[in-house]
Image (cartoon, rainbow, N blue to C red; front, side):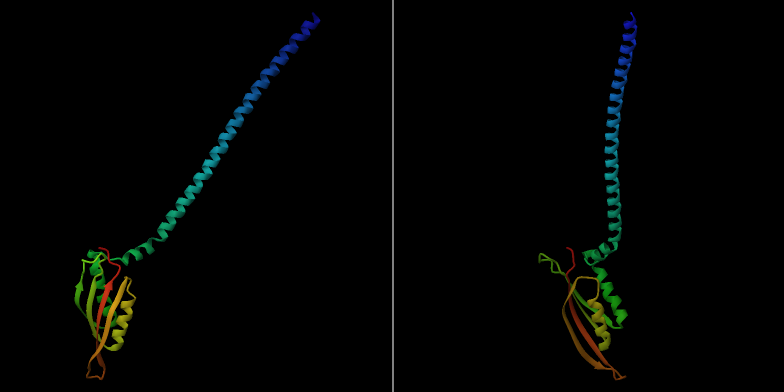
Length: 176
């Protein structure tokens, strides 16, 4: 009997230990699964933070190049914006002190690429004409000066010479 009394508590303790070990095993397994989920979530968060940083960098880059984009697009003129080049020619007229007369604007649309040709005349002193040519070359448009002819037309009462220049330019940055 004594051995039975001694065996029952031992079996009971072994059973409790077995249940505790099973519980511990499942608890450790659940903790490991949660740990894996947490690591996966951290990796996803890190990846999303990289994407957010990349997106903010792209937004910053896009805002930084906005001015450059506007400058590039301003070089290309459409039919509606052709008046812009004429205003630019008039603007440099007043800056250089010459008088401007636009003779013609030719649009040869039979060609596959339309390149409007402008013919105009400016009058003033040689220095003013040279300054006008300098401003013309530095306009923010894709232009080609096909022809620039300078003529001395008369001498002033003050002894200064009056000159005339005839220009023929093509707008290469023109969109059809």
